[in-house]
Image (cartoon, rainbow, N blue to C red; front, side, top):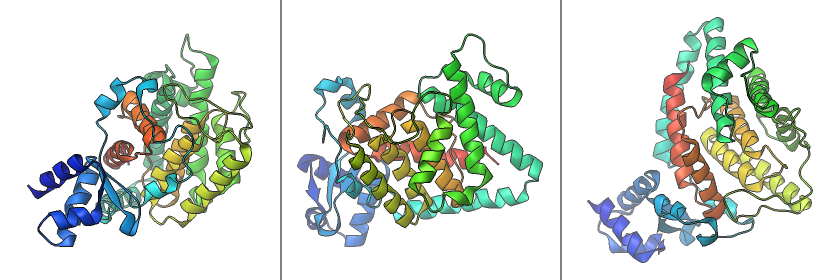
Length: 331
């Protein structure tokens, strides 16, 4: 197949301008670009640059990449890459967005048929499963059953640390907050991000303002910004981009990755990122994610890959899978 030949060509060249691929293969420009878009959506090729500066490269072999220890991995940049925003051009192809929008329309139609009691029950189910999985990604040892008993009956699991119980309850409070008034999160603002983070970190002794000191991240040599003024500027740029981005899925995936990448707070960044991503989806009529079936290790690898290479391709695969599953499992 021509698509496989294109992939082989890109692997041989390592980094290939779009024009070089078009010249190397027979067929119309539209057809060849469609083949390339399929390779991108399959996570086999990554795209960077804009217009005539667009280039394609083979996706990183994750197994091989993570077999190496952090000190053995060559990072695109060990510090914050101020040009990272350019990487988000067309994360989803037009075809992908159409297909996902069609599936989401089915979700919207299902909601219309639910009674208030059933709708509330589904929101509760999603809240329990998100609170469990998002906390588990952060090392929380509550089981799904523990989480259900805590949220529904206020029964704390025996032998758990206070911080674990608080983490679960804070997830619930944050989701209650975004579900209560979804329109509040469009447009986005610094105040709204900080309010959400404050709920996520309630009673966990973490300042709600942007951090004043450097932070390290376990398992990677990537170092986020350590100057508060730069953090404030990048959050401002983030908000501007999110508010200008039309598609809710694009908004959400940029949010989850960039709040995690900027690390504006001393702690709770990834939790805040996931909940904020859901707030933006729900505010724009899209189904929120529970991440219920995501493997925590794979999620962490996808985030680290973005930290180290600014490569969103693996995270996109996980995100799309979880969005599709949410549409099928809830409501």
